[in-house]
Length: 146
Image (tube, rainbow, N blue to C red):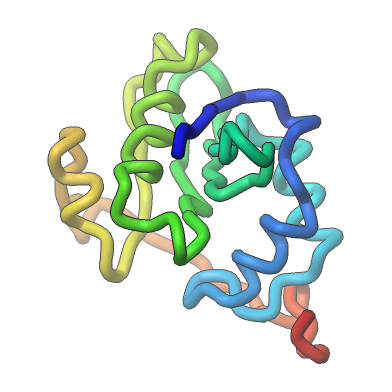
């Protein structure tokens, strides 16, 4: 099975991305409209089954396109995992022509350090980073699973 990779945001299956993301530990119950807006304001990468055209992977970079990018929402359909799709998407995002002047990429992961470490990602100095977590009610909606 051959995979096609694309930065074309119009190819991203928003419903598929939404279904995948709402099941993750980092975006539980995320609303579809939030995913749609996130896609519209990010550089996105899709992985597609070349035979069916179905989206099997998704990733995005939130960036100023000059100095900084946050790699996020890297996800592959479960049946397609273990084939290097996530790695290829991340490598393609890092090599994106609009991101050549970046000084820093960051990401957060609970369980995929082995995916990112071979690409040069290392743990950060915790005393330099801070965060503000807001109420998930602003972006999530508990409703029946689709």
